[in-house]
Length: 249
Image (spheres, rainbow, N blue to C red):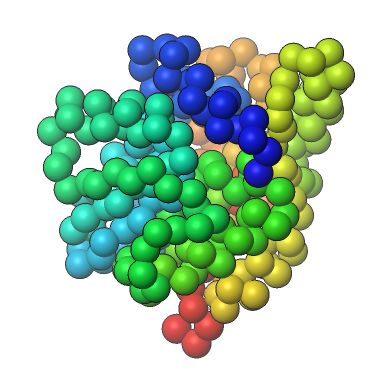
């Protein structure tokens, strides 16, 4: 992982009073019913247990903590950015959520015992890592997780990914963007999972293009989620959401 990412995320809490800027790119608000299906799809895929202590690796401002805190016994959120952890902590305090612990840590070298967590999630993290770092993070997450893991990555075959990579490289030439995301074909992730002793079940969500007007992005994004809720996936979605479990489980 490039050192610039730590500085980048440390600056994010200074750029707004809400969490709408949390996403590295553009945040799209889904229509109410689509937002329900979006969350339901995560739950149906991961199937969290009420008895779990869940690890959120790269919790940022706490979006996934808010999604899952009512589904498990306890959540531990880690992030390598103290600034993002402060935002998350304030958000939890404001909402009165108490079954969450926050730890400053790096997903590539987790300070937890093997099998410490029933399940784990890692959303919006692996795309910021080069291949070696991403593999180290997947291996560490597998080590500390007894059961299922929900992982997220960017799809190199999506039109969104192609457009974003072109834009990032153009901006990098004028010194206006550092660093950039890593979009990967799924076979690279499958290889990481196999090395960590895990098997996969993947699905994709999202194909909207950043230059569309905000209300159009909301409609298109909602349509994508509704389609995904019916099992109508396609290979060009902008992101992978992957549930992996131990081989033989």
